[in-house]
Amino acid sequence: GAAEEKMEATGLADLVELRLFEIIGEGKATRKDFDKQTLSKLAEFTEAEGVEILDRFAEAEILDQVKNKAAFLSGICHRFRDRNDKKVKQDKKEISEINKEEGIVELDDDEKEKLIDLDSFTAVPLPNDIIHYALPVCCPYFAMQSYKFKVKLMP
Image 1 (cartoon, one colour):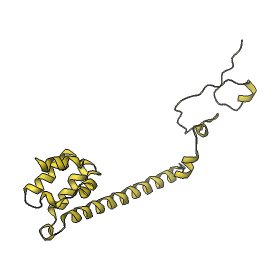
Image 2: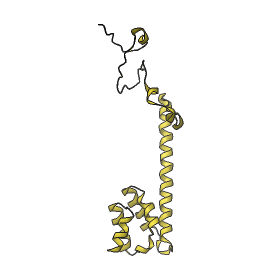
Image 3: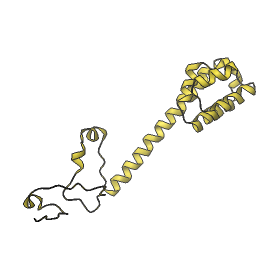
Image 4: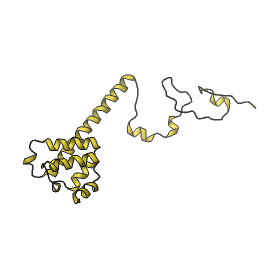
């Protein structure tokens, strides 16, 4: 009925909405406990993450003592996001260390923004370069003496 329409307006994924209705059905919370802002925060997560957050909410031992369940759920969302941000940073650090061990130099974000497509072109690819495509050029033969691959066209 009316509760379902309000839930759909928040953009919750199907399984997240189903889990929320289960929690309400179990009497652990009421529909009025969840304001639109809190449900919007929950909607920012993937379906699996949203269900996990609601599971943590429902399994909290102090849930029956919590007066402001929206704030409690919001806090779980923030902690979940913080944990994910730390994991992403840790993953980036590990990738950076592996790249360093392999001798792969990765540009930082500022350097990447300064690049244009022309900066990635080379006349002499290195042995470990991955060639995605070739760009044919037409110029005097002596101008391409340093090119690794060339074809001489004759009339």
